[in-house]
Image (cartoon, rainbow, N blue to C red):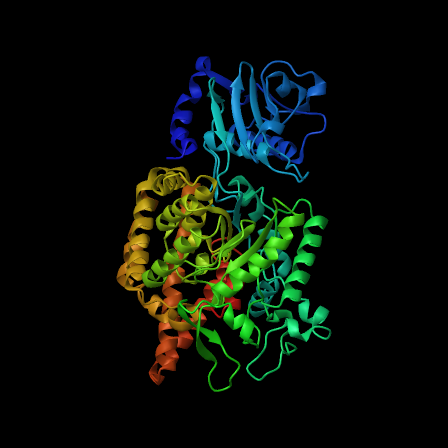
Length: 624
C-alpha cells in the first residue's frame, strides 16, 4: 500500500498530541511561517501558495509567506532551495529528476525537490513535496472543482516530529490528457445552444487536479505523426520518396498532410535524420522527437519491391487499407519489420550527433505487432496504443503484443484510448487498470500519455483517480486507493459507496468477459442493454443507503448526488439507444419511444448545464 495513504488515518489521530508533534497551527492561529528563497523556483513559489491556501481551508489560519532575507525565527516551513536548507545539508542539484522530500528538522519542516532538469527546463519537485504533505494531512482531490476537493477541518494542525516522506517517480512522464475547449467541444456547444465562455471558465478548475496528483513529469518530447509537411516540402522534387500506389503513381495530393512514405528510400531516410538532428539541436530540453508515420489518408502503404522486401514473410497476416472502390481492405503480412528497420536506419544516423537523445515512434496500424527479426536501435522509444477493459479477447491480444514489444524495445510509452471506452455509461475498471500500470511498469513502461479523459467524472471518475495515483506510484495497491477514495470523500457512507463501485465493477467485468463490445460506432446499443432496470436499481440502492448514512452532511450528500447523475443518465441513454437500434432494424413501433427518450435526454442535459459529472458538449459532438 502507498505509504501516504496508509499514513492518513494515523496522521489525523495524532493531530492533538502537540508534545509529540510539529505544530503548524494551534487553535486557529498560525504557529509556523512559510519561508522561501529570495528568488524561489516556480515550483517553490507554487508550493508555498498551495500550502498557504490549503492550510487556511483546513484551520482558518493564514500562514505568512516570507523570504529567508526576512530572518524568520521560530517554527518554519522551508519551501524549496535556500541558504537555510543548504545549512541543513540539502542540495537539490544532487536529487534525482523530480525527487521530492518532506522532513522535519527540529523547528524546521523542509519541503524540497528537484526543480530543474540539466537542460534548464523547470521541474516541479518542490510542488510535489507540498502535495505529499497535504495528502498526509488528509487532503484529497477526487475530481475538479470545490465539491471534489476534500479538506479536513481542524483548528490545530500538526505532523509527527519525526515525519520523513520521500518520493522519486518511476515514470518519467505521467500523462493523462486534460480535455480542454476545442473545436469538438464547440460543435457540441453549438448543438446545445451554450456559451463557450462558460465552458472555458468552468474548465479552468481542471488543471489543479492534475498538478495535485503529481501528473506531468520530466520527460519532454514528441512522438506523434511526424511527416505532415513532407508532401508539400518534397513531393514535387522527390516523388520517389513517397509510397508507390497500386495504380503505379506516388501521388499523395489527395491527403497531403497524411502522406505515406517509401520508407526504404535511402535519400528519404537521410533527409529525415537530418531534420531530426536539427530539431533536437534546436530543442535542447527535448528528450525525444518523433519519427512516427502519418496515419490515415486516402493512399495505402508503399508497394515497391524494396519496401515489400523489408517485410518479414512469417509476420502475422493483417488487413490494410486499399484504395479500391469495391474492396477497401486487403490482407497483407504485417509491416512491422519494414517500419522497425526504417526507424532504426534513421536512429543510427541521429545517434552519431545526438547521443543520449531519443526518437519516438508508434506501434500502431499495420506496424502494430512486434517485429520478427528487425531490431530496434537503443535510442528509439516505442509507443503502444492498445488495451481495452470492455472486451477480454481484444485485451488479451493487446497485452500479448505489449509483452512482445517489451522484449524488443528498451523504452516503451503507452498512449491508449481506453478511458473513452463505453462512452455514455458508467464503468469501473480501476482495479484492472491499476494492476496493469504496475505490470507494464515492470516491463519497461516509462512514459504514459492517456487520451480520451473527457471529464465524465460521474461515469468514469474512479478510473481517472486510480490511474493518476498508480502513475505516481506503480507499486501502490489499487484496492487501497479505492478504499481511501471512499473514506476520504464519503466518510460514514464509505462502505455503501464502495459497494456501489463494486457493483459497477462486477458489471464491467461481465461485459469484459463476454467480449461482445466492439465499440461505440459498432454496437453501443448492446452495451446499453446491459444496464437493466434491475442493475440500475441495485446501484440506486447503494446510493440511497449512502444518503441515509451521511444524513446531515451536506457536502457528502452533494457528492452522492454527483454520482447519482451517472445512474440517471445511464437509464436515459439506454432507453434512447436501445429504441433507436430497434427502429433502425425495422421496428417502426419504436419510433415514438426513441423520440420520447431523445427528448428526455435533451431535457436532462439542459437541467444539468455545465458540470464535472458529464462533459455534455463532448457527448453531443459524439452524437449522444
